[in-house]
Length: 161
Image (cartoon, rainbow, N blue to C red; front, side, top):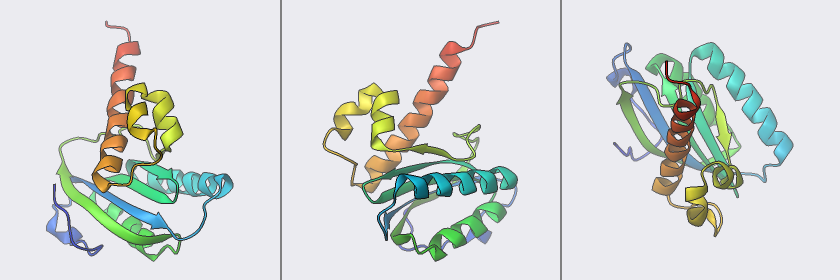
């Protein structure tokens, strides 16, 4: 995984035929209430569905973490809008990587906070007992763990034919 120094990403360095995954964290510039979060999630989910973008958003105690999956030409304008969004500050790219297949296939934008993660992935409860994770790698690992848990749960509940 690469860790670019800033938010400037050269999307043209990726083949337009290949999926990419962009992950980042940022600090919230304002106190985000539940209504504002719900509005953000609704608009993001609609936009992402239209653009064939999948992903997950983590928010807790003023920290955003997000993974976006899609083709470079559709991720680029979303990334530009995130960087222009006054709700974000101190944006830090965690990685931009080629994908073989989507991790969040059915999620135009899935949301998790630390309470939801603790509820749905009990094995992560101890990691979250002191509040939201603060290290970028922890947030990224949590978002991926939730996706892996959901995928595993779905495959376990599907009858074998």
